[in-house]
Length: 232
Image (cartoon, rainbow, N blue to C red; front, side, top):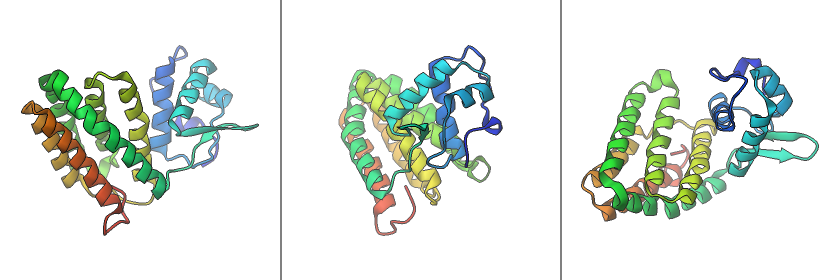
């Protein structure tokens, strides 16, 4: 795919768009439109095509560079970064295994009941989206999945760990959608998320940590286990 053009203009952006809005619009563009690695993300062009100021776009692209989803190339500006390869995905899962079980324990200790209410809503959204997978192309499912994990990270009360989850989840979405595989583990993933939810409802911090670890181990096994060809 060539440079970003009018055909992918997001809805709901006005001239006074803020950096956070620009960030979300660009992130959705990369994840939902499947822009090829190396696709130019020219600030002036996007600003003109979207009818917004260049400043928040520039700030948003700098933030996206920190996630590794875009890269700044000398004399070319920002481009879409390459997809993770299998080795990169393994490293990403190792990082999640370090961060998320701990975050689940902390979130349960801080506010088990409140977190459980939020997780129940995201699990419902995941379930409904999985039932519509033939028409939804998994965008709603992935969004709810990411929101489930982000809610736990936020509830843990550590802003640095919470900030780390956002790019990790984005990389996983992109890897799963655009490496040629199909997401065919919704039954297993929903069951694993349900186990995490039950642990929060029981206010059992140790069980929350264990359930999150089991879920991430399950994702890794389904990615690189004996079948090993279909991401997650």
